[in-house]
Length: 422
Ligand code: ATP
Ligand code: MG
Image (cartoon, rainbow, N blue to C red; front, side, top):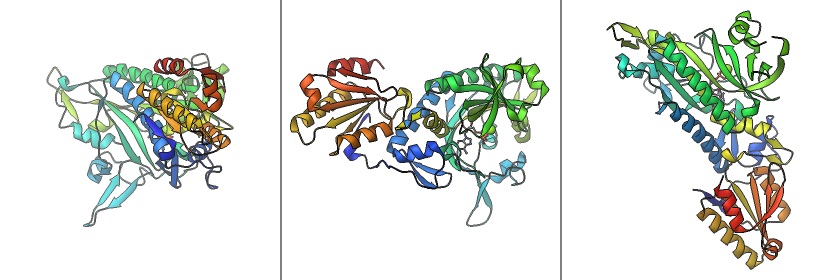
């Protein structure tokens, strides 16, 4: 569906966000009617929010497919037995588990990540070097019993993650893909409008390897502290900042670094054989010897990405979406004040724009101009096109860019030509 009449959109904009909502991203997304807050750390996606979310997902999917990703979907419910094999079932080892129980006894987990079940599943698929490398991925709901849930949609207890896992023959093959994945990540963050503020960042490898890489977007609302090297566009997470090894490995200079707060929008991990050994995922190499598969994992949270854009690319009037992830390309605003000619003209513009494949939200509501403009600014669609008695008289429609406020006057055919080139 590429178009929508606002009179049929059930969501209302709000002047105030709920008083318990402290994060700017959630305040704006709630006020503009993109999301609804169920409870702390849990949000629903409303129609406009879903459209932007799906666009973020599409950008990620395209870039994952380009590097050989193959999409799938695993279950949220988890069998403890698989997690016991890697020693990640106990609450002492993993503090973010949500666990539940079966009516007839026995526990189940709600997946907070998917290394274990996927590694286990791949034992049925991988047996020879001919089966490698392979790169399955999914957009799937994770559950995490996060202690802090104060950052709005940036840290939620239920969220969709794009998680890709690489299965390679050895570390050389793995590193070649790891670098490709890093490039794909850069493209994703550029495409959603965060490229100039996002840094590939050295971070702790956790229990898997010495280091991992995070993609950190500089933002005051971020929970992480990073040290940025502007010259190379790289950064170091504070958690590994004191480790002299990092400097040797990255070649980043100590002297020019600047400290900044940042949001982790994605990360890439070398897992090595941590999971394949524990779960028995092996393959026969060309010499006929059985060896463990070499793995990596690559995560992005599309809603955290959407929230980061809301946090950074907004102004006093509301959200400001980049064209790539805006819920619609055009906000068509009819100011008829009951005038039938204006209504007819606006209907015609709506029909022609959508026929040309332009995604339009049509404000056909019976409301005052001030209210329509305030809502339009709050929702943040890149281009507002106004149809009024004045624009009909002049033969051109007023077109206002949301990001800059830049105003031009265009005929319908000029508008269609412009927009079909986007
Ligand atoms: P963080 O350090 O912020 O807690 P993480 O290191 O646990 O995140 P991963 O488990 O690797 O992150 O998750 C991969 C991606 O999923 C993150 O880079 C982020 O974009 C997203 N993500 C992680 N946790 C959340 C959450 N609680 N809410 C929304 N998105 C999340
Ligand atoms: Mg992290």
